[in-house]
Length: 389
Ligand SMILES: Nc1ncnc2c1ncn2[C@@H]1O[C@H](COP(=O)(O)OP(=O)(O)OP(=O)(O)O)[C@@H](O)[C@H]1O
Ligand SMILES: [Mg+2]
Image (cartoon, rainbow, N blue to C red; front, side):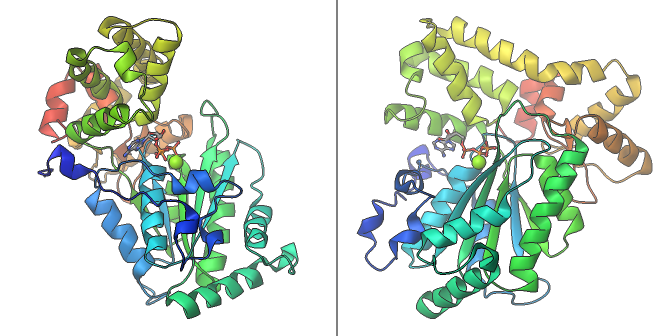
């Protein structure tokens, strides 16, 4: 499946400084006060399926047919590179002379999303200050018209919704509230009024799932973890450039890197962020060597699997999870009443950091399937069978 050479993985898609795009109005490159953030992109291995789908969406004529989604929700496990991929795609779009309006928001359980402030502020920052905040749809329509006239394409609003603190637990009700607010907002600006293209990145998977279920004009793009080989290439390449993972070469000798990354990947999959954190912690405490890193990985891993481990005391849950783990990497299951009931039960218990996620209304998938596979002592072989290693 992934036949490209490690070198071929990296595309040079650095956007350069915003001012270097003479034809592109600079406001479209700004990330609410930070030019740096938007222009800086990481070397990115191809995620052909996800990227193709998103490109088709942003390049298709606005509201072509009812069968085309009017907005996209991009979801996937935390820290696997959703924002990195989307930032790169948006940079490419802007380089092609198109317009993108990036927005960043964070949420916390129980806190209202201030959508009606964020978008107008971003629009005002692009020189529409003569309008009032209530006129957000109108402002967006104006921007969209200008964009279409000048570039032939609708403006793409890319909203990154992150959680304020990664430890935050979102109850099913909190996910429900966020999904309703976001979904209604997105439907309004893209479907009721064709005022932009809209891409919404959410890191709480339950929110993405609820939007997909309730708003049938939307579509869900699930970003999959990179296979082990690609994951390793990215980490090594980034470490070599001295960017993120800069501590990798400080704490590990060259001949230990492969072994440690494999140990990590079997437990954490393609989660880049937590690897960075683990390495920084080891380095911060003045430790080094494979054993020190592996010990940290193990601690991190035990914290993550503990809730699943507790569930395994219930034989019915255990049988179900085993079945899901055997299904495939994303744990797709055929629909049966009993399975659906069990999935819902687990979702209700733990919607945020949930063991389970439904990727479409018809299927149920295991989010951290490899954790479960590991608990059943099938780790590496399971990943191999699934083509991840
Ligand atoms: N292709 C890549 N090359 C280099 N670093 C990467 C790559 N993908 C991800 N990273 C690094 O991993 C970290 C997490 O990536 P990113 O923020 O894109 O993940 P995410 O899936 O959007 O996370 P979240 O769920 O929190 O939104 C970042 O620090 C980023 O620099
Ligand atoms: Mg992100």
